Image 1 (cartoon, rainbow, N blue to C red):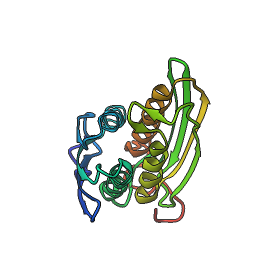
Image 2 (image 1 turned 30 degrees about the horizontal axis):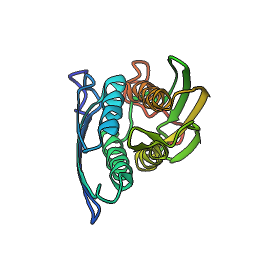
Image 3 (image 1 turned 60 degrees about the vertical axis):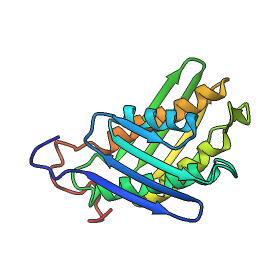
Length: 201
């Protein structure tokens, strides 16, 4: 990180009748992750998100998993999105846009995003199975819907090819991570300017 830049970090605590979540992010990290949600596959996906975005993420969630995993996964997306938005601040000097094609064995996923402040999700990621182990595959979309809404992110995720549900989910997290890495990076040609003609993002 440029020592002249202010640290781009944020800590968010979210507590409801369904979940209690603490999340911390460092946009200029090295991809370190400590995710403890009690949902093994989801923790694995958060690890992938951190590693490939080069964003340090600490995430702890105590949720009503005796019901199911839905509230925990969705609320983690909300809290993580809020933390990303807070860490980005005014978004001065960032690239703002990011896109990536991620190949993983049989699977090819495309992710493109804009840190515009205007949340919108376009989701074209059908799964060939309802479960990955005990994890409901429909929760992948729920996570990214919450993330994009609360980060103020326009996000498009498309499955171009894929046969294995685990590969499809993992490729989606990695593709979004790589696009996010590009979007939050400082643009050396932009300096401290906003990447927008509107004067605000």
